[in-house]
Length: 104
Image (cartoon, rainbow, N blue to C red; front, side, top):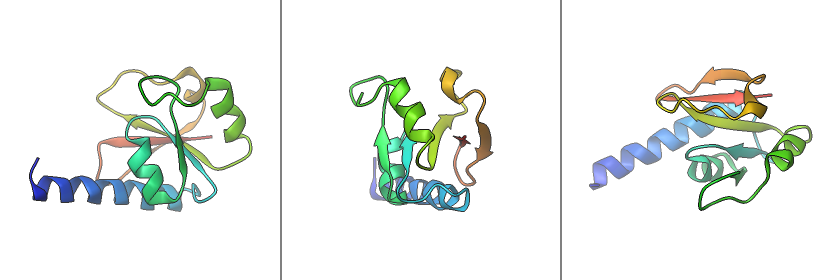
C-alpha cells in the first residue's frame, strides 16, 4: 500500500464516521462489523466484534448495548453475511464507501 492508498483509506473511515454521526451514532456509542475499529475510533465510539481474532463481545452483549447506547453495524455489501440480530435494524448507505450501516 502506498501513501495515497493509505490516505484514501483514512478518508473513507472519516466519511463513514461522519455519516454515523449524522445518523445519531455519536459518543458514547458502539460500532461493530468489518472495519469497526478504525471507523469507531474516528467516530469517538468503542468497537466490538463477535468473531475473529478481535472477538471481544457476545452477540447478547451487543444487543444489550444497542438498547442503551447508539450502535451501528458496518456491513460490507460484498459480504453476504448479515448477523441475525441486525436483520431487523435499518440500513443506511455510507456515502464514499461500499458499506452500509445498520442501526436499531
